[in-house]
Image (cartoon, rainbow over all chains, first blue to last red; front, side):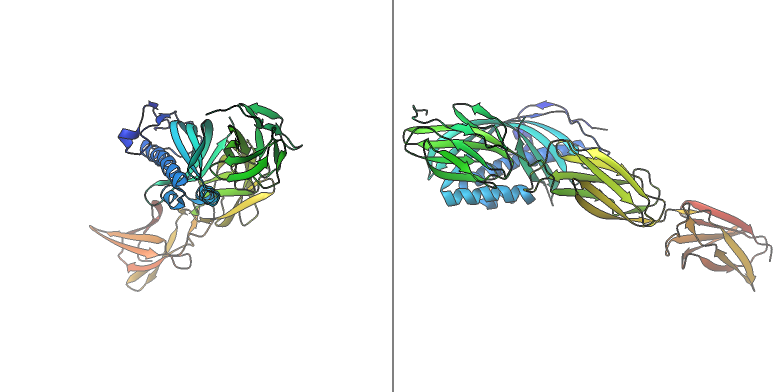
Length: 165
Length: 289
């Protein structure tokens, strides 16, 4: 009954094939409550797709292209980031998000298997460009909560929300 | 690149905000509740541009340094972390603020399964709920969600669960009566309802009778019910088996109007049994009457 995930204090990029090559990724043991057992393969897939979502979100916000969100986002999360992209484009702003580290823990797997919730303490850089002129780069450390739901071939981020520690 | 700035941003809390906290070199509200008004006070003189940038919203505003910059209700409504940059004539200053979900629930995302199951299953029905505010922000503060499963007779099971990181779940027993149950999750006057179809379980006390009909014996079951007294659905297969000397005949009959009927050869001394699924019924030894 693999209820806990092994701690992987390693960069998973090479093994999993996602693009977050620069980001250090740490997976904390899960503390799941609920009747459904989370299989290791399912956990790996959800985390892989979640990390990929940071890459596509970064590209979308840097290029002001909401279509880049389609593969990894759904529902409210997609609408919100797409809204921010629309606002950026209207204001002549672009933003560069570069994630540097993730500390991820899966905290909830819904009994019917249709959602996974994880927390992620992320360290990332945000650079704001106004009409291509860099204004500021800020280092951020924030605790995010993400809810993922399965799609045809992958898990998609449906909620992505930073919360104060 | 940090330059000496002739201005200083100072957070200025309106009455509904928490106390201002210094955040780096500029003062900003430490947190703003989604949708609430807030304001920032700058110092210095001259023109500047204020940027508030997050994953859900981006604001840009021309400001006059030294004035209070007010944001009306509804300006920032997506919970999250925001980078704040004030670009003035001699350089930029930056800080950050958090927008938190509003405390009042406004929406429940309720997942229930299965949509159909047999009666009387322990923990057979599960429900999970995520709690959101009016802006579709996940409310992460622990809160109590009520779950109620009610059968067509009005009998109800009620449980509560406390959310953790915005999620709560529950498992409940399917009730003893078949029909459509209402499964309701509720918090703060907001509710979501799912319908769970409960069907009869396996047959219980399967019993048949026999009577002679010329060269055949007419076999008919009593109305087939589960152990809670619910009628087993028509179409459920009932198997009649007749053993006579070294031969065995088997007939599968679907339930029709709650009973199964079949005619089988009347052999004196034959043994006839009835079963449905894993449930065995009674056995008859046919003696010609």
